[in-house]
Length: 449
Image (cartoon, rainbow, N blue to C red):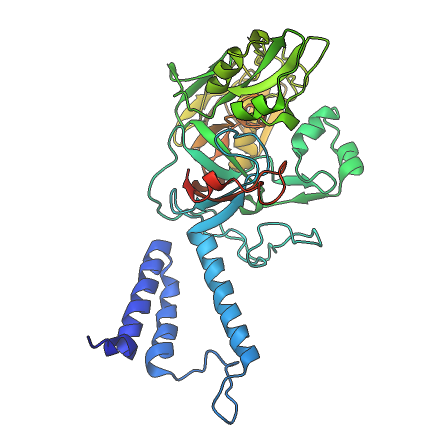
């Protein structure tokens, strides 16, 4: 078979030019069509020496060092392009989604699932999200700032999807406590921002696309009404599907003996994370799925099991200043929460001083209005207002590890412009409590989420 046409300059131009044209149409910015002239010159006219560093020696050979530079530049550009518009690698740092996703899981996150966002801060160090390795400095510059825009994706965020998104409270970060919620720390310090910054600062203010990324399950979408009743999630009056990985915590009373560590491992628990209190006697907080609960219940030394359900007033460490919307008149706990309506684009809500805590961050921060309350009257952009119409959709996210998850119950709604993508595959996984090679979870490699 004659495959000589594969080396034809017009064939090469047609393939690469066609792919580039499709990308420009997807991007929706036709100024980028000028790039077709560059591709035409690379493959057809060859007037400009684009790879100017490719200088051949007298014997006609390329310098090996420059060949490596050439390959490195191509790989860097290709990886940046793929990460920006298609797939990004992500690591699970906390146990908020166990047993669905485990600490030490490495994921591929699809950005085309919901449509990739056009970078809002395009001037950034390649393949680094927001912090430079080793130095700890910010990896981007805000010299160029684009408005939020999302390209067309395969679908929209649906109820019960596992979603990666920018942390809503991540616009302000304390240098001394970079993983903590700045606004929560301010509230715990009696709303004293000056003291908080003096103790834990300086602070860094980040744009939307450079906030730290979180992964949770979307339990309610725009327009839904969510309630959590005794730890069970209800959306629009219907119980959430009982996913296998959803966990709660239980007090497990025994006959005085601790459960053998080998038995704990067989059940699926991590012995290092299970605490036995001889004064009970038993385990004050054992985190279990429904399946694991039944296995524990069958153990001969187990006398009684009680689910740890938080009723009002909330148990330590929760309190009204930690639970969204951070107001005393909302008598909610992590296990008895709502009902709460999730704002939808184009929908309007009546505003008063009672419900304003639910929407004030949306109005002032996510949708960039000036919100003021004067003598008990609400003003938006200087005008007296008793209604508000939302400019985008919002979502409510929760971790499957319900009692060990900082989620929307603690920081509220997730705006649509914070959505990053959808996990599609586990490509690697390690257990921090095991040594190599036992630490590799072979059964989770290349597993679809």
